[in-house]
Image (cartoon, rainbow, N blue to C red; front, side):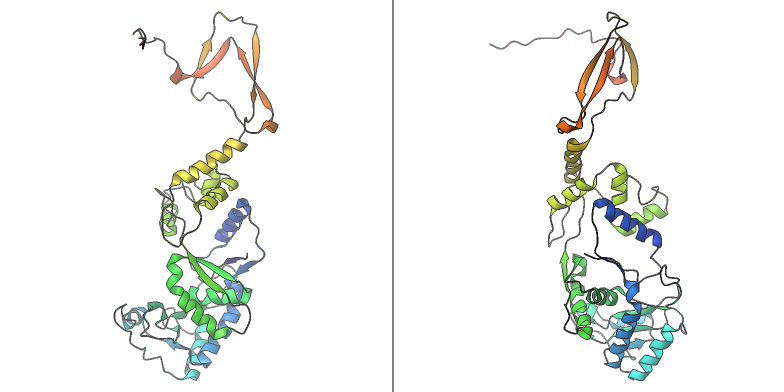
Length: 348
């Protein structure tokens, strides 16, 4: 398994996210073979994009995003070809080079794949491969003014790393056709990656949307991504969950090809089961009331021996002193006992 960061959008990628993800994965107990970044392949992706242009498989489009979206049509109507679709290869290469050099403003030009504007799959209707973004990248700085979109960076990065299987969530199933088409353009008899999709993990009564969780962080509703109320790995860690309990939860939940919701009680069961086997038992009085046993000798003290963990005989024992002065929970104390006599019901 490789750990790859899809850092193709400098507006949303930060080093703190990279560090946090690595820390969470290591805490869960996993090790990766190689640490990779889509930005490692920017030069190769750019060269392959130029090859697409030379082979008549891509073109530079100067229309607005709104106009391009309108030309794509709908699932029941075919799209309309862009007026830039058939411009000469040399003109496309020149425009693409100028995009790379930063000679155009953001939003003025994009590079589109030339596929099929009448395809039943809307994603195949000349998708965008590159856009202009004049923003600092946390790894490459200001070296690049153009950045690949996910669909272009995804499969090609898999191919460079010779990944056999690229696991995605179900919303990427329509992307598989585009994934394969783009791989067809560069494939050269090496190991060919396969995209496979499974349902994402959804928890009952739990917000799992990254966009909505980001709102909670940015609005200071929570104290950060590791707030114990957050359903993030770092949040669960601070709440007291253990790596083994989370791995057990994932094993029990399994994988599915259909969207579903896993009851949060299963996650809670896993942590209870894990802590029951590993946690040291302690005793505490949270809201104490001092209790004096007046008919118990003042100088006497008895020691009660308790196991640190009844589930683990190797965990040892600890001593609990019993004497004239004790502390009990306030909720367990009453100055006046119930005056009503207890009634005993006898059965024949």
